[in-house]
Length: 212
Image (tube, rainbow, N blue to C red; front, side, top):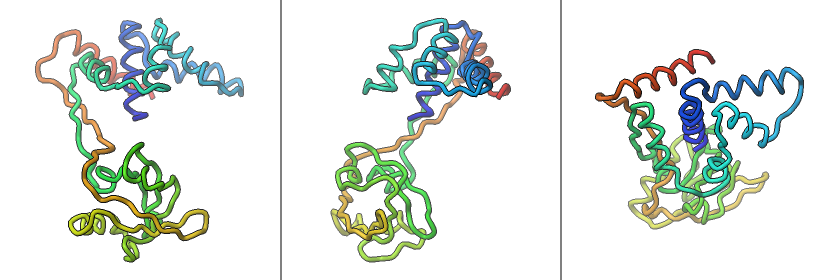
């Protein structure tokens, strides 16, 4: 979600500044005024820098979408339309991301939990960030976590995970019901029929990446 927030913030800065500034403007401002002077900056400094670049008060954006729980999809599509692109929502590719709400990385042959979706089966099972999943129903993982989950999902409504947490091996029961749908990804697709203004906006947006 952080990338989506950054995308919307970037487009809003462009829109309100009539394409004069982007999120890159904010980063340069922070670099010049804080990093070069060996100073740290606060969340308020960042918010103020964004508002200054946009030439518009963006506090409401941060209140609703960064610190609050306001649904952001309507604004996300609005920002995409400003650039003449469409957002295509895609389901997560793995069983454990889509149905269990787990983002994880390979740790040797095991899975290390890096993110948990709120109200997901992983969240309800009290799985924790940095837990290392060692086995599924007693089967030691060998880079095959997703395969075992998919296999057992056809046989059982839940399964047992052997998890290493703070150097202690614990067992966690997690639901394998496929009711939830977590960790969507989004793909930007350029619209074939765009206005001259949308083409101009898109060009300005793309140019900002060339400056990084």
